[in-house]
Length: 229
Image (cartoon, rainbow, N blue to C red; front, side):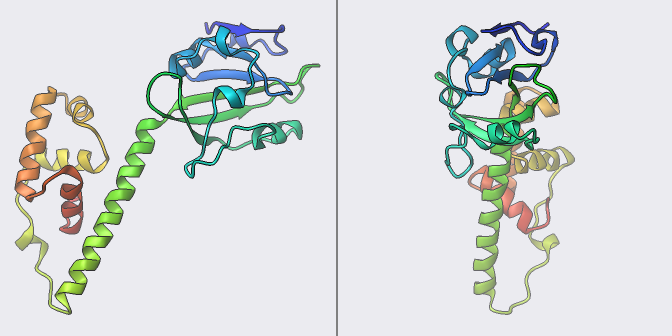
């Protein structure tokens, strides 16, 4: 059962909810009135320290253009006042301790507020997913740049075939290469393969050596360029 820290008696029995996601609720003035244990686990802030404060001061979320999304009369609150749903969204927040963290937030508003206006926020940490997406974007940009340079240099010459350029990778090395392309760290690759981190590191080193790549990003770019992914 999720324990809740709260000010006034809840209009909805939030204490009856069980969720692994972080959970907090705000009133019509955007003051936090509920803060779950799971919210404390994800963001490292205790309920007794945040209840009664404005949500935009506590969460302080920004979008991927560094625009302050969490603010007074934010789109979420305006939609809630009109009884409209808000699609789930990602924001970047900076907890008091630790690195910046990407959160994906879902908003729940009751059809009837039973005399007390409240907006429920469910959120989960999607930092790993955002980092993977950013890695893929960088890899794609680097690949396009290399292809443009190669096209300009070749000047109409017939390109060599992939079979002539591509080194031979083992099945395990091909799997490691695909995991590198997804942006996984050495520890994550080890977990996926069910091996020790040092073994995963050795696999990665062999892949980089076979591809003649200085780092992981160049290995992924080379593999994409030569049809290895």
